[in-house]
Image (cartoon, rainbow, N blue to C red; front, side):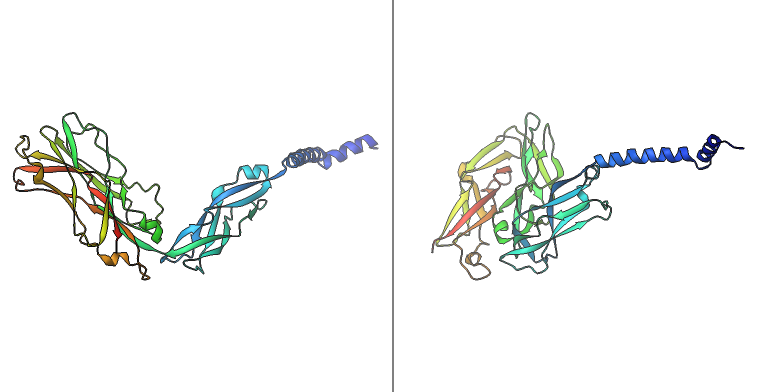
Amino acid sequence: MISQKEMIIDFIKSKDFIAKIVCLILAVILWSYIGTQGNSDVTLRIKTEYKNLSSEYVVSDIQKTHVNVKISGREDELDAFNKNDIRVFVDFKNAVPDNRYRYDVELVSSPDIPRGIDIKLMDKSIFATVEKKVSKTVFIEPVIAGQVRSGYFAGNVRAQPDRVVVYGSPEQVQKIDSIKTMPLSVAHASDNVSDEVLLDTDGYSFTEISSDKTLVTAEVFSAQNVVKYEREIDLFGKMDNYLYEIHPDKKITVYIISKDGSVPQLDINDVRVWTDLSNIDSSKFITSDGNIISSLRVTSRVRAVINNRTDSVQIINIVPDVVTIRIKNDN
């Protein structure tokens, strides 16, 4: 006859009682760990993107470039949360041009986000102004940096292409006269330097640009017998009854060498510096809606010529080679 003690032992063994106890202990430990992981929340600033904006328009002003998104969940899930899994869009489907208008903000989240994470968009709409997109062609100003080898001179710095088209609202585009390049290094050079460089677009508020780079070339000459002349700039093609202000308001420096290596012997009056404004007429002072503006800013390339001596001397540099001119309607 089996004793009561033997029956209990046999029951424990037959029912995997030890395994069940171990599982229960582990479950209690796991539950305790989860219980210590309390819920929390964080607020993220997400950059707004645009959707359904016609290619004919540009956002010239917006109330917020970033909106707040509240993320709630367990602390361990929040620590692993990827900010790139959410995007925020301002919907311009029914854009009202030339008016400050309230537009809906939409939140799009990745399906990979854990179900326990709660995401709440704090800004449901924001104000923005949409305007007709305009364009403007401006000069590229090549920039060089560094010192060439001793006894040499860097000049004839040029960009190819030397112009770029910028796009934006009328106010954004009007403020841009030229765009500089990132510096081309001529350090320790004794020969010509040429390389493709990016345009320095920091600080500009235009929305598009036709190209973000250009080829910059700097010619390197022997500095021996280089002569420089400073001259006032002449404005060709001026209109009557208009006032002209030049920036920078200083003389233009022209660097000249002789083709045979000797010191150039020139009368300062043989060197003429000018810029051509004949393509600017009174129609430029009338806007597309018929309004008359009082002043206009234009950029123009500086030219130099040597009277009667082009066979024996050469201009190797003009500084500055682009000027900004403000033209005022004095009528």
